[in-house]
Length: 248
Ligand SMILES: NC(=O)c1ccc[n+]([C@@H]2O[C@H](COP(=O)([O-])OP(=O)(O)OC[C@H]3O[C@@H](n4cnc5c(N)ncnc54)[C@H](OP(=O)(O)O)[C@@H]3O)[C@@H](O)[C@H]2O)c1
Image (cartoon, rainbow, N blue to C red; front, side, top):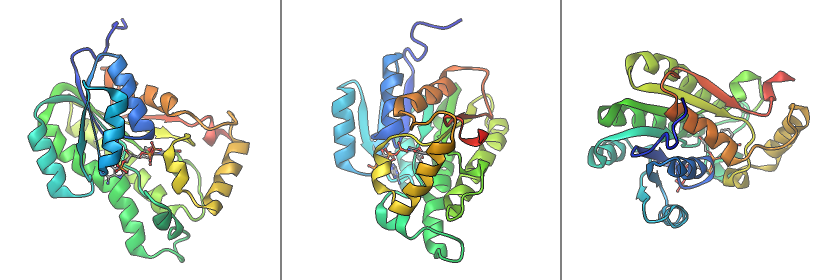
């Protein structure tokens, strides 16, 4: 049966919670009774997010690519109930510009994408798990690109595929803590400002083909993130919020 406040009294930590889908997840979790902690790299974004969320929310700085910082962060935080990790692969235009086909991409650049999308999730899970309650959960954020072959997108695609594989293994290893993943399609968030024109052309073609011919909202993706926290029988699962991207 649905509770009135399914996250009432729960402490929810959202890495990458200061913008886009992460911030929408924080807002929804708060509405459902949670005490939220949002974290990301930049002080300005942390300040802006806590201004939106109000004094009940805690905002902290963290670069989730840095192992020592992640270990220290969770060591200081104490017990909590649910973790969401929404760190992107590429975070700025310069990095995006340097991503292309395998032939055209420097391996060092591809590695930074894996550091953001895959390894930061691994680090957060590893150092958060000892502090999570047994009824708690971890929800990662993947994407849709492994469902089709997108030329020029191999680096993010392989990082996302690795993350989705991790979810299934970790759901067994970490039980009873539940481990899930939300795979957003095109969602209108500030990350769109970092996308270059050629990638935008690919995405416009995707929009024309998919069943629901618009971008999703951060709130629609956040609903899936919060579902993964609140449904006690859901684990090892990928929930795709993609407007029917893979159907056509
Ligand atoms: N929007 C889409 O269409 C779409 C599609 C597929 C998948 N996704 C995935 O959805 C997730 C959320 O993306 P979004 O669209 O909501 O993007 P967004 O609005 O740009 O938010 C990204 C968040 O991650 C934080 N962040 C970036 N690097 C970080 C790091 N190293 N350590 C800690 N925090 C970091 C950012 O804050 P700081 O800059 O302050 O660090 C920000 O809070 C990402 O994993 C993205 O790959 C999005």
